[in-house]
Image (cartoon, rainbow, N blue to C red; front, side):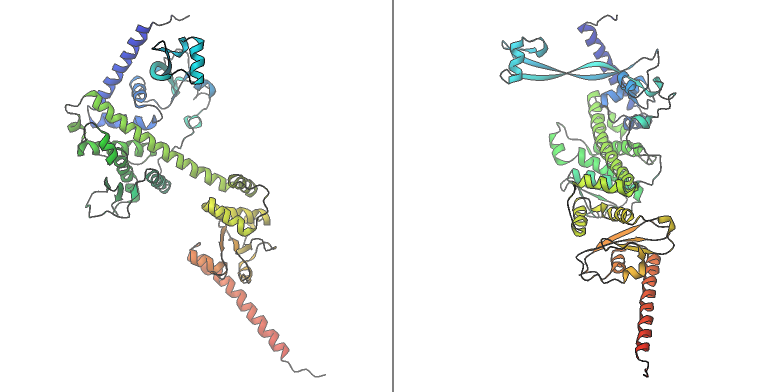
Length: 478
């Protein structure tokens, strides 16, 4: 059985670990290359405190993912024999109770005092202490041998280095700005020249240079959001000593670097040129505070972006589900049970709660109600919801009289295309083709084909009508 450590031994171990962390932080500021390596590491370990991320990096360079011994067991993996754990700080809150004018640990207090704390009669308070715990890196386990991938365990969003999700990431950053009441201006208040963006503290607003490329907009927006988070007027007022302009730029650029690198965006153009000037005559506490703020801000940004991207992926997955599953899931999300709602009520309910789901809902509803076989479509077809007939030729269906309807919901099936659905108020829109044109729901060549399909029906009706008139006008002899 292992010998229990004394309080003095534990204290000495914590002090040694703290000193090791301090030396590691100092080493980051030796060169831009060192700080870049650390920032890349921070991105991977943003879920850990900055101090623990530093300790993990100092003891296990190149670590990819870590977890405690029980954590790996839960994943079905086992720590390999002989592997030494990576030391980390573990929060250890201790509750104290007031007993005979002294604060004593609640665990050592008499039962009457413990009962008094539970009942609220005896004052208590919590103090945060730290003890040393151990974690193990992915390669220290047999996870690889068992075919368990890192992405299988840490189910967060992982980019593959491509740029195909740039719009989703930009949307995530927009919601991040909204959550912090940061105004995104359509353009700068004045000419900013070659600067790619700017933050206005007095307005708590950000403007991007309209000359930026889409990729530049992402990294620049992260940089400016870091300013908004770390250097807003309230945060500046709280600081004991104001940061200089170079210090603010250095922090914002580091946050942008961490987040961009974690998302897989290019980081070659990032400048950490303020490093040498900033570190001169700076104490370790200043450096630690700087990294602490960078780490916290980066972690917050990454968590928000990844959460948003996971919602997008979930939504895409839901849209790909078979129609019945999708509609049942949407019913649960909205809270529908067996309510007898009209088409108008259902469409507007979805529109009010999940506006982006209206078209997928109508697509799924049409496919379910008509048992549509998409792969068998060889001409444009259209389904008018709740009319009692299935998919018909687009031209024929578009020629119906919709003037008596409260709301018209339609779904169009085109050869080798995804379903297209829409809805309109007949008082404002004449027919589905009119709605498609007004809302630019499909490309012009397709729109022209649908228009021709409808015109052919109109011409055929006109020919039929003329033929009937001619027959009625034939002289009859009895």
